[in-house]
Image (cartoon, rainbow, N blue to C red; front, side, top):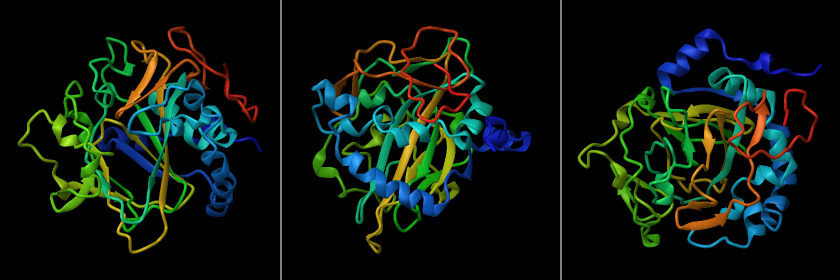
Length: 315
């Protein structure tokens, strides 16, 4: 029996909870054995970055490896993953029937790695140290940000660095994304914040705080432990972080984040390059993926990554 988006639509109670908390889940996407087998098959493809759209551009430079961004554009398993009804069903419940995926990223955490700083993202201009936003909502929109679906490709526990959320914090932005963070490679794994080893890939997210004296209320934080094959759905404007990897287990934590928007939102409207944390790559081969419905606006570039013939995926 073919699974439809409606099979995974959020209920009224779930929508209410999401609006209050800023997140919902976890949801089952794969059985644990299926996820483990898929990851084994996927690893060789991830190591080979020659087919990555950013590696092909020949312009990757700087402190980060942008060749591992947006691998759904060259790896079929990931292209199929971002269109799975278990994911797109909740997404369309939140953003509407016409939805696109504009960005995917892997988030590995190895034994001994620091946790990730508390942070929020609205228009993603901060990561480029630029005044230009990466996403622009219509002027009459009530909110910004993106819907992030974070899937645990391995078990995610407090011990190996699972996510943390502060429920309800998506309603107020505590950071100014027009500010610039300073990169310091020597700070990685060496700083404690409120007694916890945390950083932001060589940056300190606290530099973007609107109030330098403010700090998040960690007493309200919840830890999002998930088994492999589950996902969590949240607003990027939700205060989120991750625990450090304790190093008490040799199991890495691997998360895969896919970011979704309604088709009314403009993606990279002011840039022909992806600039992230000191790295830069041409967007010549980039395209959004339409995961549900249709595009009636015509202001975004799309690529067809339909690999399973799902009837709800249209170009």
